[in-house]
Image (cartoon, rainbow, N blue to C red; front, top):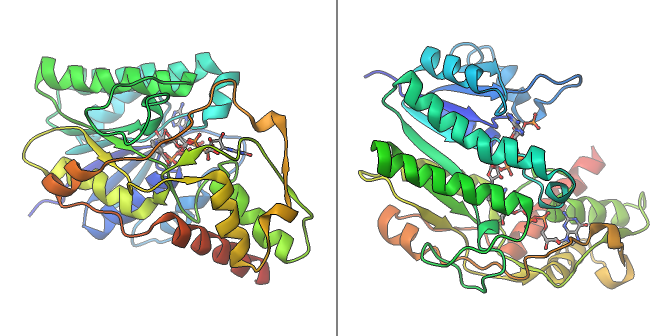
Amino acid sequence: MKNKVALITGITGQDGSYLAEFLLAKDYIVHGIIRRSSSFNTDRIDHLIADSKIMNNSLFLHYGDMTDGSRLVTLIKKIQPDEIYNLAAQSHVRVSFDEPEYTGDSVGIGTARLLEAVRIADVETRFYQASSSEMFGATPPPQSEETAFYPRSPYGAAKLYSYWMTRNYREAYGLFACNGILFNHESERRGETFVTRKIAIAAARIASGVQKDIYLGNLEAIRDWGYAPEYVEGMWMMLQHQKPDDYVLATNTGYTVRELAQFAFETVGLNYVDYVKKDERYVRPTEVDALIGDYSKAKRVLGWSPKTLTPELATKMVNFEMAKLKN
Ligand code: NAP
Ligand code: GDD
């Protein structure tokens, strides 16, 4: 049987790297779009690139950018993917307040460019859009597929545009297109400026005596933090179903940033109160106070459930940083 072909935008990111591993293990031919950079930006997939059995055999990388529509058309025509996972994004909410125009261009219009590239290239493909719980913004939890959207950042607004464009291409052109509305998911590969990884690194460094304290913004925000490798499997499950639809993936549990810090510091036998300091620079002009996802539709229709909950996730991430410091 012919191997399935997948195209991943954002393959160098946290989710892209796990998804590439997941699809390669399922015998997919995986193509990824990477950005030209003046320094190395492929650390999360370097182990795949270094493997000569994989690189240029079942994994192929192509330069491209979500702001370059003609390149997206060329790549889709050439690759003829069975499945496209659109994970590329300027994904940092705080940064989106500083760069609203670029965020809108890459996250919002970028998705329109990719959808239009599918149409122009006239390929038969399934399309996954990385939608976000940030789209719910100010609407109180629990949030499900039926909850009203109220984004609170340029990032959330751009993701909402992408969400609707994905639905529109499904309804207007019959494209097999799904929105995965994913709540926060973290891992040892999470970018270092997101709060879970920032706290995990700090707890390990403070316990090892190489850092004194950590500066954070709002400690009272509630998030629903799950484990990223489990979420990429959910993305794939959406595209295997007989019918395209939109699904929430979450853990249905909520903790404050303060509780997250408590779990992380407890892992190394410390009390977070002694080390966490406030810095207004990390406070957002508008905050999303509480996100807790109701994933019952994904469970019922796809058979997807999370396994790792926030306290265990925090411990896992801190232990990883401790092990790295010891090496
Ligand atoms: P991430 O680690 O920040 O990765 C983002 C990826 O997008 C990187 O590969 C990055 O490339 C690439 N990228 C950024 N701008 C681009 C552009 N203009 N053109 C092409 N590629 C570009 O994000 P993640 O955590 O893996 O999240 C994956 C997707 O899910 C994102 O769309 C994010 O917004 C969305 N999402 C994430 C979560 C979460 O909790 N993680 C929840 C809901 C939705 P470089 O490596 O070169 O920077
Ligand atoms: N990053 C960061 N840094 N966040 C902090 C800090 C800090 O020093 N101090 C407090 N926070 C709070 C933020 O205000 C927010 O309420 C919460 O910690 C989580 O922040 P992030 O880890 O930056 O994630 P996010 O929830 O804003 O966005 C992530 O999840 C979204 C899904 O809900 C990103 O991955 C988005 O791309 C994703 O769509």
